[in-house]
Image (cartoon, rainbow, N blue to C red):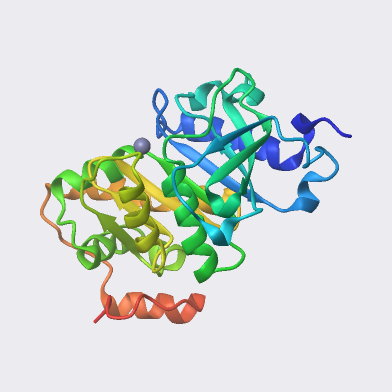
Length: 270
Ligand SMILES: [Zn+2]
């Protein structure tokens, strides 16, 4: 068997956590990531029949039964992942209809998966229905997106349109827009179910006064999605208090749709 620490999916996860911390999106133990892996990704590195510990998940997710996830640990700091991946990350396989998670590697100091595990797993199930190549769910606290939820209308069309207007590339990167949840208690099945419901129609879900969830086919794409929305929110926070002289018009948005072969979410443009 090869060393798990040399697996490309592990090194990419470590780099992503480190980069997100460097962006200031994951203060203290803020943020969590889950990456779905296929059995062929693992076979060179692990005996997947060797279960180290079993955790009840507190929910059921039949469509994810037998699926493997590399996931960040509860109470762990993104800044520390690079120094001790085996303590800060864990690889689990969902079993018994998703009601149990079997630990195959990691959480070496006795830890377990993120407290946002329900939101992650329910979001994976929802995204896989919408997009079978989805592999990543990522949560973090990007400064400007969070700030924007204090001063901008939380209506999803209004919020999305403002972000699209802040940078030309936004409508190209997230034509499906941004869905928004009002403030809810985090770490619960309720916010997990609400997030998953929102994930059916968009890959970005803002948690008002808290942060954002993103989903995508790999770590780079999901990081880039959040990065682009956060950049737009940064522009917004720089200009929101100034008189608006110019913007990107809906007519120009339609030109972007044509040029880049994307379709803006139905009803979001004039
Ligand atoms: Zn959070």
